[in-house]
Length: 69
Image (spheres, rainbow, N blue to C red):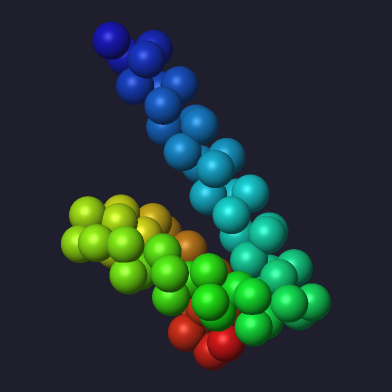
């Protein structure tokens, strides 16, 4: 069980790193597309919003980027 939990935690960390990189690049090169994608994701429903907000709590720089596009 611990091994599965650790693997999931590592994957989640890697996923956040990849998302942060993509968001940073899109904020520089395609901010309008990023803004639309973020608005769409936040509009899918409360569970999506909850998951996104929980991830962004661990990603302050990425959260700042999204709040300023």
